[in-house]
Length: 238
Image (tube, rainbow, N blue to C red; front, side):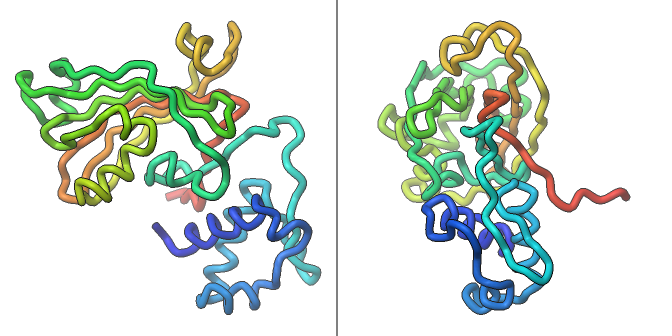
């Protein structure tokens, strides 16, 4: 993860834990604390300003902004972040999982193509509801090849699949391709995300790879419109 993003995440945790309630140390002081340059600190602060967490007043200081009153449960993450939901929320909130379904089956043609497996291979078919501080936030549909990610159990699903991949299987997670689209709530969204007819959904379609280039996950994550946001930083006009 880029250093300024890591610093931004750490500062955000300190804001959420109330270590910083009104004003932060100066940019110079933060640079000393994180053993980095003011340029890196400035980029981290821009990330937090874009997330509506901080307000930087030139010549005055860095201030904590009041939580968005319209969407008090909104969780915003960088659209390019690919580190697992549980890890990304560490220190920010309590994450729990409800396993809606967990099966092993044969892949369809599209899954074979994306995951580079044969029709004879087995895949996990997982549906999980993710809750933030007890409130329904995400509904995840995940397909993974068993031969690439062996040993997933119900216990793993109630914690973190990505943590299991790193710590138990000793595999490094690489890049991911994502497409984020708007959708309307379906029957499962109503059941597991507390949605109503006509509610908007953010649907994130992802194809994820290990560092060695093997694809290991095809997934769709469905987010309530009022509880999730994705931010892009430094979008170029080239």
